[in-house]
Length: 438
Image (cartoon, rainbow, N blue to C red; front, side):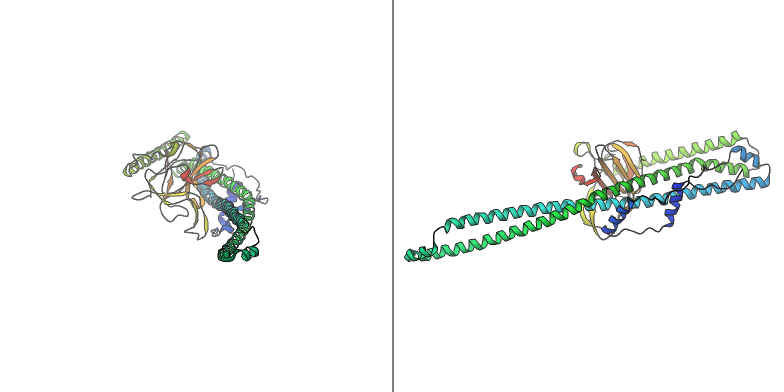
């Protein structure tokens, strides 16, 4: 029976390679776009031959090794190596998932900002077109007035007018002013038409880039979700095997003789105790959340809002609005794709609730959003809750409106404790005020 540790699976091997690469922060919108587009490329050189499953020792192997000191020592070293390998694979998977989350965050930021810019260009072009039409109309009215007032020969009028020539000269001056005003209006209309055309051309270019940026964001999201699934698998493997391997080490190191049934009973007892401890911790967290909500004046849950939606916080004030802004950390203009909420008296650790009923599609570290939760409400509508200190839900879990999903914090790209709350339709950021009556 070989004691060599087998080669890790391809996903974890890729994760190890990812850990070795130094990550550089994205500080400009252009860099984010380049990163987002690069994600679309297929990694054709990434293939690795699949490795065989890990050969964990059986209880019979362990008990047989107890009869010989050399065999016992070899089995101890083998088990210790397996324990270390499990931890290494978890750490590598964590680094790989974090890298993919950062790439998705950058790609999503690039798409959000480009979408907002294209919408703004369309709006500005429409305004310029409206101004041109208004100026053109006003100039036309002045020309019409000028034609009516000056329809007869001015020289003849001057000759035959006699003492009334002063009135005619006054009319002539007035018509001259009207003529100059109409020329200015026509010039302004022409300028506004040129502006509108330029803005429209820019909007066309901007929108031509959106499809690629959207595809990049979707590809990055798929990779981030896959990496998170690999991490969850590595954690589950570690949890399932570590207890057994620890008990096997004890079996080799103890001098008393026990049967396989005795050791397996010990494994089952340890699992039971750990599950009870996790359940106690969960119940305690829920109790603290309820107390915090009641202390904040929320009556143990969020306040009902528009059409069955609720605020993510039981009591709140808005500290930053949705829209284009100068980022306080990266020092560049980009879309702030959500509304920031803070709780009176302090936000760190307060409960965060689901704004509407749905299914959790993401619950993990998510780049600049830190520990975040994304809930799919159906029909292409999703909500996002960012910068949490810890999470209370997992991917695939169904949640009801007002259900506890996290505790507020300042993880990720954040300058202080708050809840960053997003609403998206078909992946496009929308102002949360359209859904919740803040």
